[in-house]
Image 1 (spheres, rainbow, N blue to C red):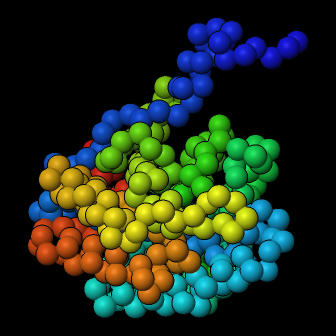
Image 2: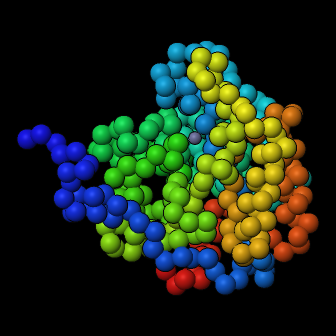
Length: 297
Ligand SMILES: [Zn+2]
């Protein structure tokens, strides 16, 4: 039987695709802890060498760029967070944790959260469903073995989400996902019409450093946005969240944001947010648990 083209699909086909995973109730709370006006969730996707390994691992140069994330990036991030006394979330491919177990143990020892980020930064929609399930389960076990802490949330590599990802997250007993886009503020995930009780902490490419700064010598990918403009975009996203009493969630990478010409963006943003006086800096896990409890989920 020849496969139907999208314009030939019956309603149940296109509706079924849309209904696989949907945004349900909005979980923005009436008030944040301590009477804070908005929540700030800083996240770092600790990809390191897995970006190049995922693509076949042929370029030693690009692997060394990944190592920058460990050598220069992570120490800069961790010392800034300690100085500012704020906690953040680190999403870690299992292979990164196996390459740098001490780094991940330090992250946990300093009070930050570690979440799932695939095995080797694989693209979920390119992996057969049974293998995807096995990789997530093995990744959770690996992170727990190395750090002593079982992750409670997942950010899928490249925010790529397959038709089985949510089912595996539920099987793992995770309380939240942070890979989808359907709102500015937290919401409940609906799977095939059924409320799941799982929290989505939504992401957006505009709140991701890699979009503005990534570079590939052999493709047309270049950084076109100056650091000042990136700061302006992030700041306006935060100001909007503050004005609406919502969530400001930022995704960064240790091998992208930490360069000497860029790290000020994050430092300045933290100063700006702290200057408001009533902002709750928290890990993704803390925010997910709070909004879940507020909503009685
Ligand atoms: Zn990543």
